[in-house]
Length: 241
Ligand SMILES: Nc1nc2c(c(=O)[nH]1)N[C@H]1C(S)=C(S)[C@@H](COP(=O)(O)O)O[C@H]1N2
Ligand SMILES: [Mo]
Image (tube, rainbow, N blue to C red):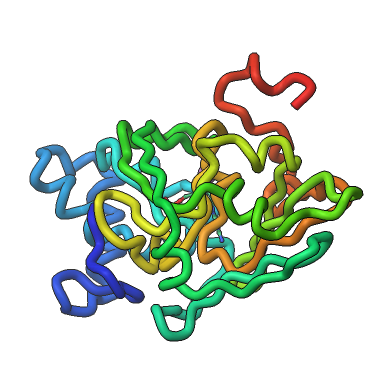
């Protein structure tokens, strides 16, 4: 599933999908009627919008190959574009900042190609990403001596995540501007989201609006609901991090 830039509602090829069509497709899939690859591709296209209201990934039970689910813990998320988007850097820093999309695009871009892994089991192989290393923004912000962690805010108004400062400085942790070889679509958390490559997907905050330096790691949205704070994909890296 590759949504068009600026996608923000339940549409397929520009046409709104009726609720009955969606329910019908779910019923078909649930009954095991859906089988062929072409049908599955069509199905994942149609299902993507409703997965916005599927924080637990249950629609992932419907077969759609190795493709992304769209996750959001809230209903409607406001749309931001190059004119309206801002990324705040604040908290325990010497230099607070408010970056526009153009500011971020003008900085050195780091490319990564990795498997994307959600803790609920689905993954997408070899996804292409690019963006600004978080360490670059942290260097500019100059954290004060007591700062030990970063906390991410989302303009969905609800989601939060955190990393230790040491984790945040890893060279495969980026403020992502591109994903799947194009601008990050609204449903994927665009125009700017986190991509924390060494960790499970829930660490990669979508619709990123702020990065706050804090004295200690604070639990995020899913961690308050039982997910482990240590989310390294490689368990050997988790200890003591
Ligand atoms: N703001 C926000 N960020 C989020 C989430 C979310 O619900 N809201 N879900 C997380 C989870 S659990 C995963 S696996 C990925 C999913 O990214 P995707 O929606 O682009 O597939 O986003 C992460 N970041
Ligand atoms: Mo996830």
